[in-house]
Image 1 (tube, rainbow, N blue to C red):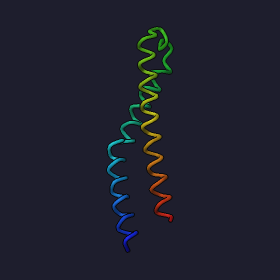
Image 2 (cartoon, one colour):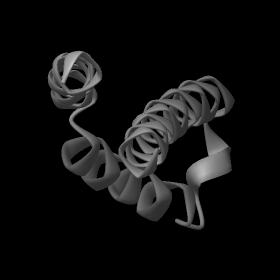
Image 3 (tube, one colour):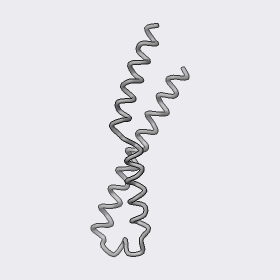
Image 4 (cartoon, rainbow, N blue to C red):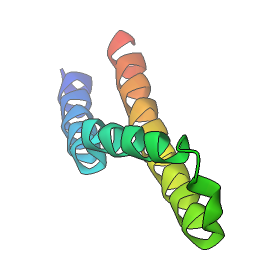
Length: 79
């Protein structure tokens, strides 16, 4: 019973963290950046290109963090 309470508390914390990452919105932003990167003239402005690539990396990391939280929560639930 104590473990169940602790698990529920951790699950709530994980959900709160996941809402912070807002993975669906970040995935949408990432999709837009990917479309921008695929444009023929994307590399014509190196400074802009670099900033876009940095933003893409940041978004990919946030999405990966969210996936990790989901996986850990699932693993904990299985235990």
